[in-house]
View 1 (cartoon, one colour):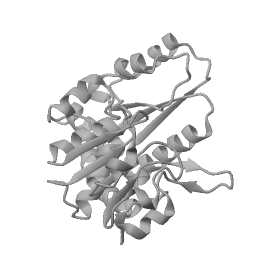
View 2: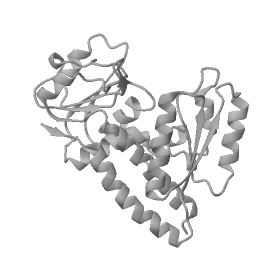
View 3: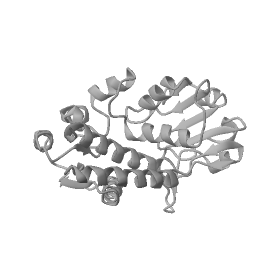
View 4: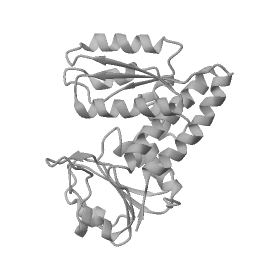
Length: 281
């Protein structure tokens, strides 16, 4: 079995991005990412911190605005409006999830599509489904980059995706389909997930439930892409796929260190693209 080392690939991508940013600096272009964090959720704060550190390593300017969890929807929209009209800001990211009193879709739709480096605006989602250029959601983009780096062919393969979120499952299914895979997209209402997972050549799981996929649910030689991140009571970070499944896999992503670093690297790539699109003449 072979480890799909997202940390290694992210480092290689960062080294390339540093050189691109250096060239942009020579043109007086400083890629800038604005991050909005609402509330005091520890996991969200940790993600934002990792994104900030990655920005600094690459040379991307990073602005973080943190707001109290009781911020009103209109106040949050006003903050986005200011970033939309700030010519120095190339990318805008609103860290999810947002508090329940805020309409997440309305917030995402308020972001300028040309600064939507998370790829969640309907404009970019539509372009992705149509196979046109636009910002891809960072996690699905990272998964595809990881498979490509390890020469894992998607064309003609049975790809099963467990988890049908707008952030991961649905866009990943679209990208896999465009790459020539046959897709099964499973979700909470799927009657017997194992009927599908046993057929998978490539199994992608992103639900947020430890040990959701067990050894008896997969075939020998399956490629495992574990997108789940769960913190156990003993403090360990694990994915959605039981550790025993690794024995039957040909490739697998570790958690942590697999898809996570690729998500951040993809976000940085989108920010650089946004800067080039907006400012490079």
